[in-house]
Image 1 (cartoon, rainbow, N blue to C red):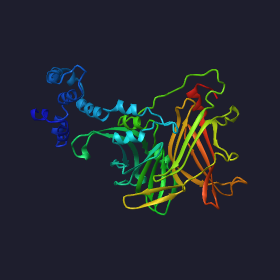
Image 2 (cartoon, rainbow, N blue to C red):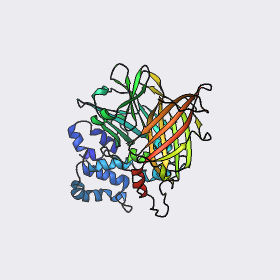
Image 3 (cartoon, helix red, strand yellow):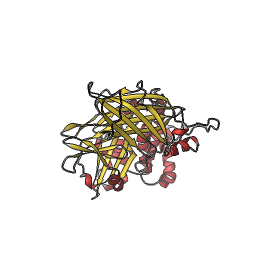
Image 4 (cartoon, helix red, strand yellow):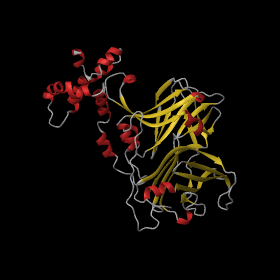
Length: 426
């Protein structure tokens, strides 16, 4: 124990992997309380030269009252979130175009945030893998896992996604401690009920799991080729770092002041920023301010916000690239046509994010092509829906130019969400 008391934090942590006895000895609360106090201090008036005396007095009282390993966990958690206040300040600068923090990507890189996926099959065999590739857009991040011994898709029982902040210790990366924050969790019932095939090519088919997770499955078999996930920037740092390993971060409610003067309060002043992209390029980006809904347009529990309409060509937008989603596994790669990522940010009147979505979507051929003198070509639909709202996009392929145009974009928001946020009864 005297030898252990004189080890630094990295060595003390690593020696806990020798065997069960050393693991138990290396979790001693008094030792880690001393290291925690020496590094961070109990208060502003605590002097380093008095630390041994303070720890010795407290070790027989408060230290032993804590559960075993408490100060060890607190030490590493404090390191993982030591710059918590600093990076929160850096996120205060808002991009006026997206309505989101301007420096999200930079802060994610500076904090060395990683994301891990943990899969478990029905025989309770578990595997955890860190993302292989990361792609940033203006309002979301797309993660890819290509390496790993995946179980067969039909054998999946649980899927978990965690944000991870590694502790900067001098020890092998495989055992390097870190703080894990749960971001998504799917059980076997959710996987079986929510999974749907949204596209594929000659090698793989893409299975979409809620929320926003794609699993690539090899054609003709059930083995997994890769996994992709996309996360919106709204509160992404907090969701990646401030939850726990079993409980996700809860986004605080930010309700506006109640307005009993405006009879249409909650129906106007919306701003929409939407992006279609993949892991290589941006396909379309649009910014639509001053969206509104008249009371007569409220239908079947949704308010309707028209961003682009067929009769107004001034807002109709060309797509800068084909709708497609490149993928790669550890050995092969390809591209799935008519699939991509959609990142949507809807700001309410006070420019606060109201509905944020980042998800894979597919483009399908419309069953009935609307007649139009302006656009002659095949018509396609891109649709998305969840409990809070839905999106419909109409895309036409101009035969002569061989280019896609977005000619209709409508966002529907649930009246339940609007009423709860604004205190109304639409």
